Amino acid sequence: MELLKLLSTNEIVAQVIGFLILLALLKAFAWKRILGLLDKRREHITSELQGIEDAKAGIERLRIEYDAKLASIEEAAKERLHETLNASKAILEDARKCAHLSAQEIIDNARQNVKYELAKAKDELKNEIIDMTLKATEDVIKEKLTGEGDRRLVRDFLEGLDKVE
Image (tube, rainbow, N blue to C red):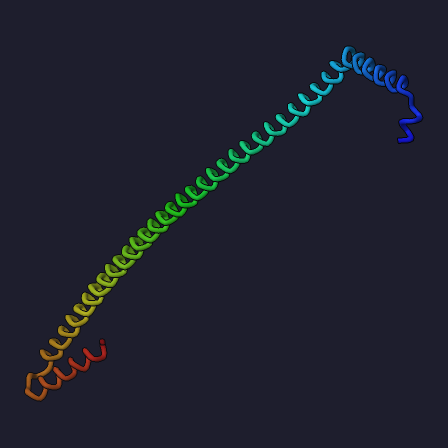
C-alpha cells in the first residue's frame, strides 16, 4: 500500500497511456514482423520434423527392401545348395554304376581267362594221357601179354597218372 501512496494518479494514468501507445506502436510496426518470424520458425520446425519423418520412412522402406533381398538371397542360396546336393547325388550314383559295370567286366574277363586256362589245362592233360596211353600201349605190345603183366602195366599206368597230377 505504501507503494500506491508514493505514486500519483496522474503518473499512473500517464504510464497506462504510455503503455497503451507503446502497445499500439508495437502492434502497428513490430507485431506482424514478430508473428511472421514466429510463423517462419514454426514452418521451419514443421518442415524439419516432416523431413525427419520422411527420412525415417525412407530408412524403414530401405530396411524392408534389404530384408526382402536378404531373404531372397538366402532362399536362392538354399535352392542352389539343394541343386548342388542333387547333382552330387546323381554324380555319385553314376560313379557307382560305372564302378559296378567295371567290376562286372573284370569278373567276366577273369571267368573267361579261367575257362581258357581250364580248357588249355584239359587239352594238355588229354595230350599227356594220350602220350601215356601210347607209351603204355607200346610197353604192352613189347611185352608178352600175361595176366600178371597186364596188371602190372595198368598199375604202372595209374601210378604214372598220379605223378602227373
